[in-house]
Image 1 (spheres, rainbow, N blue to C red):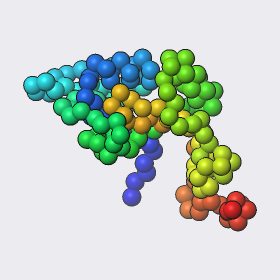
Image 2: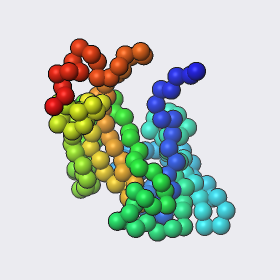
Image 3: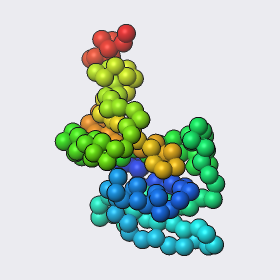
Length: 163
């Protein structure tokens, strides 16, 4: 049919655009492409990681988020995963978050048998933080490749990794 490479962009509802823009630009490191009104008291902002026009779009939403149910809240988004180039960049991101006092809500972890997490996980190194509206952000690197037509886990080690 067609080949998918990775998430092209993600749209996120936010309750306070200024607060969210500060978070996504200063903490996450995104660049603002543009910010535009969307009717009365609503707006949207395009954010980018590099040269693409946008990797994320923030939309204002007039509802307050209940921190105890943010995963079931108005946005319906479980998490946004941001892939980093390599382990060095991942460590830089982790250091950056910690230097700003950002709470790491999960991790650092390795998803997979080598990290004692999900036995059939991707092997990626990850850590998670929350944005101002409670959306989980995953920063990861080193995800395993699964060539077309191969099973996962591969037959040559599948029997040896099960507990």
